[in-house]
Image (cartoon, rainbow, N blue to C red):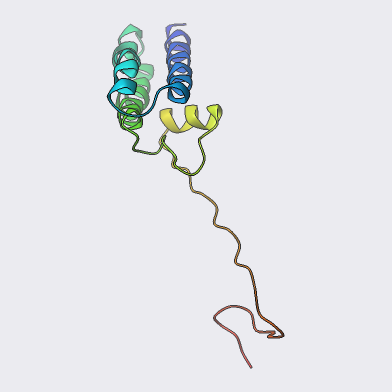
Length: 124
């Protein structure tokens, strides 16, 4: 039961961080408002009794999430996307899990006028 409570507390804290980022610009002000979340993430694994759940939570939350949130407060890292802000589910997944979002490149457009060759490897 403490595993579920700990992860619920982390998810609620990350939702708070997500909504704070919409209201407060990056920098020292955002870092000041995120410090309680960093402390929660740092101490949440101490309430668990199982060695396996403590290890998993300590890795994903204490190490990954804290570093990503610290960088996010300063406008850097994988959580602060410049072209388009992340949605809440993607923000939660990226902040807690060791995943990296890759933006899909735009497909190349062909502007050939009457040329039937495609791409760099074309045959006559």
